Length: 251
Image (tube, rainbow, N blue to C red; front, side, top):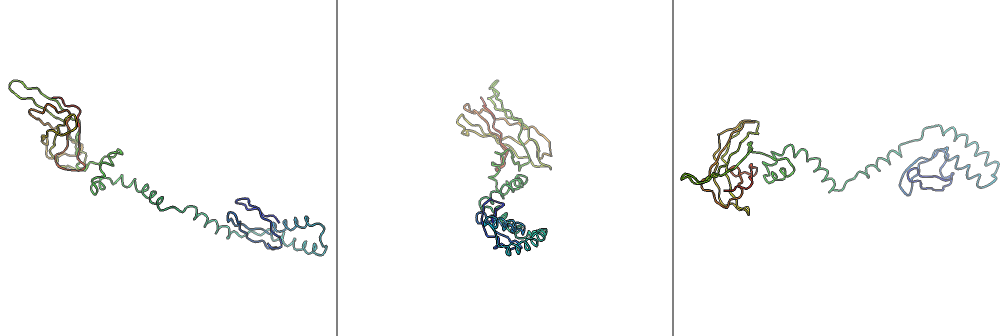
């Protein structure tokens, strides 16, 4: 009789007598699929073999017809599904196995939202990560104060007074609670980006509450003539310090 694998369509020819009148489970040699040959399949295969062999022995044919009646009755019984289910489960497990590198990559992707939500704690533990979060548009401000709306202008010397460089801006509280305000430091840089002079800008107040703003102002007398840019940041060293770079500062 001819049997065909239901998974990969590989065909095999076996003798119906070797299967038995009760049917049996068989496994495909190509894809390892397991399926059940029912008694009805055995009957159909045996009849095809008899037709191919020509006229049969009447006694043997009579015995086969009696067995066929029993097969037809048995064919109405449900086919056991346990072998098929067990094989498919093992096949699925093999299909979803992951390489170590892929497993690590998926774990990192799954952990990324958690890291972003707790990025303040991450930056406190590893200050160097502040720059990474800033690059992806998630800056971390551990100080709780932002520098905003900074302007710089120069006043020429007149009436016996020397020229002055004035830097002004707002400090805004972004923390949920009151936070201390540190003084600022302004760096004057030349066209090559080198710092040629620094000066301090006093804090406008000692504390800032949430969403509160306070205007600061710093003045430098006789600023260097080759200054072209100003970088403003908090005076205390901090990896997450606020920093503002102004455009060209002509003197």
